[in-house]
Length: 158
Image (cartoon, rainbow, N blue to C red; front, side, top):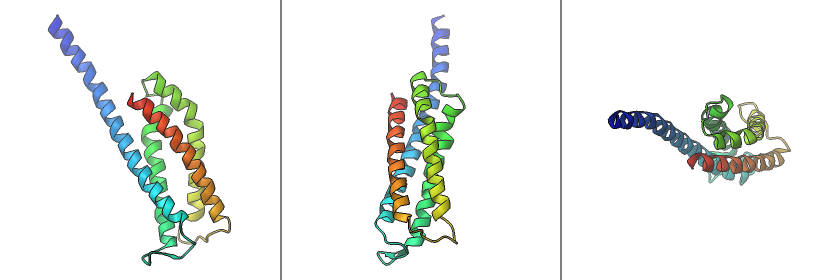
């Protein structure tokens, strides 16, 4: 019986280890997307509209690149990390509870970032007079989102 019990324990542990390994890969992808987005955010924040960045990339192109990476970052979180919570497939109660606490605020931050993207990405856009205010507001929203994500990631890694 001991051999059967040991084999069953190993069989049950393997899916959990695989799920956790997949979760860690998801977190790594999210962190990489976040890092790239923050780097571009800082570059965009330091530019005057439509001036060249070190003589190579027009601000419009940099802003479009930022918007694309921003959407990729949002998708990395939404379609991997948060989707498990929204679908009710997260098994650890502490993670599910924390995610449920943050989900509506994270969802609101997603919508605000998508609104920014809709306003400033694309071929036929003009930098609004409110661009710096919009970018500042987006920065505050992203900072709050990142704080919640970090708390959730810490709980997942426990």
